[in-house]
Length: 607
Image 1: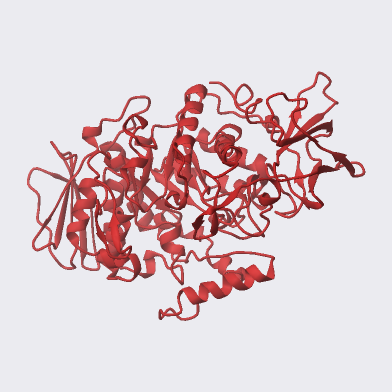
Image 2: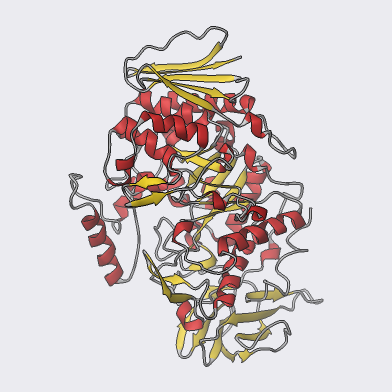
């Protein structure tokens, strides 16, 4: 396999930021500093050597030593080495590099020079997995283990492998303000959060995951950037008043100067896939990306990422979180689509949640009909152009051209848990028997399942919304905004996102995940059965006829029967949607798994 030493960060992408230049003399070290900054009038580099006094060096506006550069890129080459730190003085304001690989003192402090080629990878034979083999495990690194670091997470990789998942999805790990954050307030798009262990620890984590046959996908946020520590406006027109988003002005994908912004974002996607050997990216909330260009930025990212995968001879998968139910995301470019491997099916979560909790507030107002459960299982998502009351508009496109595995489904994730006022998990919302029933539907449906960390061992601790802003104005706005968001609900006191206890309450309790944990055994058995139903495809294309479903309701919608695949089914799941409704014996089928608790029953049959 071609290594990152041979591909990627050459003249096309590598030389923005600080790039260590290879020299014949090992002791010598020269570093090229380049930054795209059409908004700047003058830029100087403040170099802070690890073993010397600081130096102030003026940057030249291009083109200079690197002929591919235009006049809006500033550059210099100086003697420096990995571990040295630096910052830019942009028209008198001292700020970090927009392409920092590491911000050891936080988002306001200097950048540390990192040489990505120093790490010794051991995954040269790794080719990735086809998306049809994905069973996704979503985790937040800071609360996943007591250490809250990549090295701490490495200790749990064996547990994930034994569980039976195949793909780890990391919530954002790029630099954010403070020590505690979900990651969606990130501002250093290229910098690995120092508190998580930094770039080398991230590489160790990916290398160890690959050694166990696990893929690693990173959640990336290209719809907005955080407020605190966001200095991009000093450099270039990264934002535009042409588009408004829930976070203010949109990222500039289609206004004047957008070419450089688009390159900054696309390069970022390629950077994670190249320098960290990631297997894919999850694009956050793409419905909030405003881009009227002839080619949408999501399509451009997917095209470039897949081309990179072909060059590296490994599988790279790009998925998108969206609430749009829009087939365009996963249709191939030849049919006017963006060519992604999969997109979110929020409808799956909302249907099951509404049926079993009875909640009908907010977007749940459009869900709760058991017939919707059959539809989402058979077709992938419910709303395909029908009126959606929560939007007061129509929602969705036809699902007929979207294979079921191209729908990522869940019964819990960071949003659906953490965006509740108290961050309650299903463990306190529905009976245990319901949780087992929901897990069986999730893991045996032909769609692509996602498990939220701790769900597999019935974690009782909440996952709450937490931040650690230093700016007093932002601190106040976040704390008050969270309380106001839920002021009309009888939730009691809403946890303060800024209080350290809110973060501490959200940590996983790993002692629960012992061999005697009945829920953990239930998940392992379900995933073992899933592997027999959908065996790994390896390099072979998935057999789409095997990834279909026929779900039907019986006895006045009290029972659900799910057959997989639709034709000549090999698996049948039967369960009751209303408590104490008895299940019948199924002639000609062999019972493989069953659970009966709290009036809810689920049985899994094969033949």
